[in-house]
Length: 308
DNA sequence: AAAAACGCCAACCGCTCCTGG
DNA sequence: CCCAGGAGCGGTTGGCGTTTT
Image 1 (cartoon, rainbow, N blue to C red):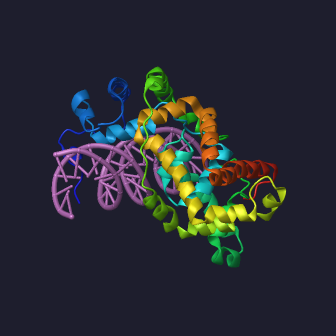
Image 2: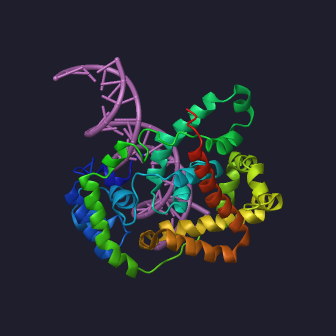
Image 3: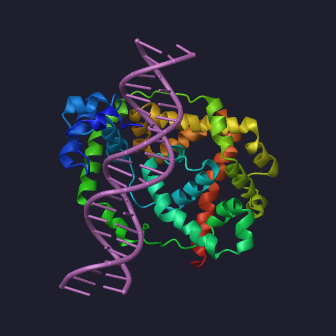
């Protein structure tokens, strides 16, 4: 299969973006809004294909993007969501609006996957063989090695906020005023497809099932057996996917809407989640499980000595 | 001090999905 | 319904910086 026509054109530049190109792109988007990427290279004179422009915007220039410094909470959420959804980075990113799918994917591939593999190799082989996915989720939080190379505490991360990265943040800030005035649009994903999406990954369901630590249930702060089973039922998967759809629409329906969320940050998301959960009670359990539990486990993780 | 090995991440590639005609 | 073009997604890679030998 051939490449998209735009990338075949002679004179299309590849490789790292220069600050000048970024400014041109940001200026254009500031004026016309994100979308219609096909016309971006033509109208700006950028020697980049439309795809490249879109990626540059969504992965780097879009306001509200948080770079580096994955918090233990974010890490926990990624692990949870990866077990639940598989390598659906865009879906996972919809739960971490300040992170791009590319960023999450990179972090998974460079840090989390390694940690998990390391953990598996350290496990009893018998345990590792049968219910790997169960351990994957439930045990991954036992990984006490927070200070991994490249993590927040590592000097390497400080280097990420290079001079140029800072400049793009400044560019992004300039856009905030414009973003606020952008209207929010919604774009619902067909639920049937989302059902397939969730059910397709039976391992994820297994993981979710296995990941039901008795301890936390006993605490009564999280979910009961019945609630947990109900989460796994078809109806409530609808709710989960409804949530995902809603998040996705925020992200891909309109970039402006996504940045609107980004700008208002976590407080806005918490507020929005609260409103949504009022409409969809079963979802509350899922999100509670996802958000509270991972945070709690990570806190617990911090107190224990390193495992590796 | 120099070279090799390693790690990270931005960007690319190829494929699928979506949408409008 | 079919087709073509655009957009989005996930896997992969190249380049660069850091660490190790």
